Structures are given as C-alpha cells and as structure tokens.
Image (cartoon, rainbow, N blue to C red; front, top):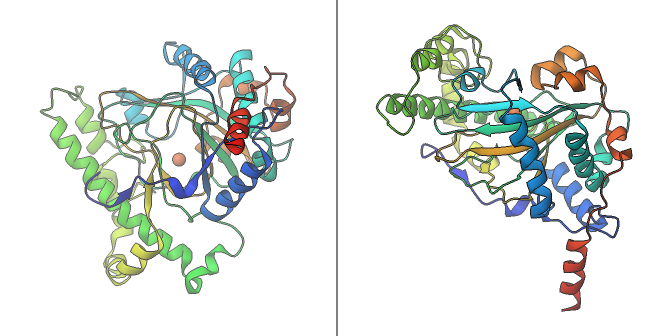
Length: 364
Ligand SMILES: [Fe+2]
C-alpha cells in the first residue's frame, strides 16, 4: 500500500527459535517471547518449524483447500470468500491435523501456558489463503481473551501480504491510563486514520480491476463489494459506509470532531504508533494477543498466500462471542478440544536440529 507508511522491519519482534533436547522452545527463547508478547502484543518466532514440518502443514491445508465440501469461515470477508479472492476455511479435527496442531502447541508450551490454562478451549484450526484482488482488511481487534497463531508453511512475501500489526496496542489492566489517560482514544484515532486510507486503497484498486486482465472482476463482483446491502466489514462498501452500517469503518467515525482530532494529534499518533507488515519465511510462527490491532492485507502478487492458523482461549468464552470471531470446524464443535488435550497428545519427537546448531554456534 503506497498511501500510508508501513514498516517491513519486524526485527524488534523476532526471536530466532532454539529448541531444547525435548524439542520444546528453549527457556531463554520462551523468556524473550513472553517479554515481546507483553510489551508489543506479538512475537515472531523464526525457524520454529523445519522445512519438512512446514511441508506437513502445507499438505494438510492443501487437502482441505482442494475439498469442495470444505467448511468456509464465516468472518473476515465473506464477499472475498464468495468471489475466491480469499479462501478462509476451518480444518477438521482429523488425526493428522490434530497431531500437527499438537506438535506446535507442545513446542510452544512454555509461551502458551503462560496465558492459557490446560482446560481452555481450542477455538479453531484453520487455513487462511488470499489471492490477487482480495481486499485489505480494515485495522481491527479480534475478540479479546485469546492467543492466536499463524504458521507460515511456505515463504510469504510482502506483496503476498503477511499480517499487518500495530505493536503495543493490546489491552490489559491499566493500559488505557498511558499517554495521560488517552491511550485508547489515541489508538482509536490512529485506527480511524489508517482505515480511511485502507478504504481509499481498496476502492481505487477495485476501480482499476474493472479493466485489469490479471484479475478480471466476476459478474456482479464490483456491485457486491461497493454497493451491497450484505454484511461484510472488510469491503470498500460505499453504501454501508454512508449508512453507518460497518462497525469497522463508516461515516459515523469521520465527523468533523474526529477529523479535527486527527489533525491536531497527527504528530503524537505518528510518534506513538506504527504499522508493521510481516513477511514470514517458511517455518516462522507468529503469536499475538487477539486484541492487538491488526489486519490481513490484500494479496498484490499472482501467487496465493497461505497460513495455518490456530486460536486458543485464555478464559471461559461465551459461544456467541466465540463464533463472532472464530470458525471451529463442525468436527471441533462436536468434540471440543482443550490446550491440555493437545499438550497430552503423542506426537513424533521433534528433532533437536536447532539446539545442535545453536550449541555448535556457541562452541564456534
Ligand atoms: Fe483479525
């Protein structure tokens, strides 16, 4: 996106993964990861999965994506899903999928256990694919009280659109007291400013796609994305924008008072917050607090972008609230699983590849 500043430097949030002899994230990495989760709301664990392990995840996802009866997610952008700009679908609780999820949880036990007790439910296991022509999501918070994970099972380039985060905007006791008690108001202003630019970006791109042979619009797609009355919070829908029917961004948020505050606080907002776009290499796993401001960007490349994703609750959660933000596969809804179930599941022992490399580096 050219209309506003997005940093691609994620080095301040990265921890190169080192495994101990049990195949779990080593203690010093756990401590670094927890510090980043608390301070910034996210951590990017590079090289957590070997190429072979990532391939296992990719193959499981492909099986689901190729299944015509797959279970589509009911959030993010249903219009993008409908026009095959995105393919967000939940993964079944089959033994291979559950084993893959369990091996990730076991490796990350030191971090996850700090936030989620063993009895806390697994809210979803899913694949997140986006294609050329998808919309850039508005900056938003997911339902709070959840730890979410994205695992890159193949390299994701900037053009393909790794998740965009606004570090430090997660919510916790007393967080609102920062910046003279204006922290949440300033975050909301920043979000509004970003979403105005995302709205313009999506609209401009969609207009250009009318004559773009690379991603021709399907019959009715332009109308559905710009003038539809259907609920969808991540499209540049002018009708719902004008009617105030989009809770992420609408005319209601852009009154003269807000515009004045945006102008008056422009320097403070620039100093306090920044957008950071991830471009994870294969094997990288991103953990984030669900109430951290973030967005799934559009895919500006001809290559599909795929992630494996999983979310685990940190507390009890109302089913309605759960299903507003997460899409458990019917097999998971019928047989709920907890973090403890995944931690206890037998999986193949992890090779101590990174530990060995780390030890030899120390010797060197
Ligand atoms: Fe989200």
